[in-house]
Length: 207
Image 1 (cartoon, rainbow, N blue to C red):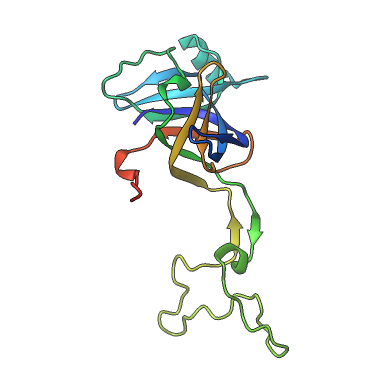
Image 2 (image 1 turned 180 degrees about the vertical axis):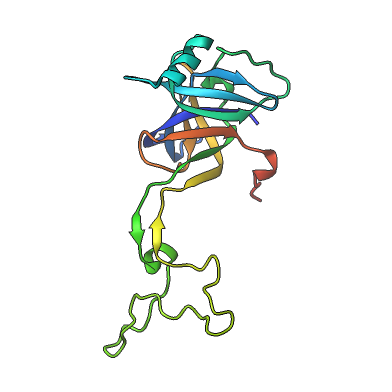
């Protein structure tokens, strides 16, 4: 499963070969230097770090003779490919028509009530009701005498690791290191993302 690191640039629209208007997300992907080669994975970096760098991190990058990177992640190796420390992996490993899985951190919404977070129906809205948007009874009395684990309650919404699967690659621009994928990608502008080639079993064929 080949993967690269990148950054979300924003959304736009393009026309496909049939002249249909397609909503796409622009991603800056690579170049990603290989930092370490492990048994089943390789460690990649993305986006040159600026300013002061902690000495252990600075020493690591100095040892392998690679510019310090901000975003570092491990991805699975491609079985038929050999990797060396310092190799640059670029966006031209993808091509138009490929399907990719994009992982990122969703936009944080702060602390939210149950109606917004979990789409609760809410209590009666009549004048006599005192429970319009409240939690209400949690349904546990003497037995079991506790709140069930995983119960939907108010809390922090968003800001979670999310993977969107099977996004079709529309355009690959190797010169400017970006690709356009059909659909939405988690996170806000300039958020870091991990782009992987989709596993075939994830691709659902429409009849």
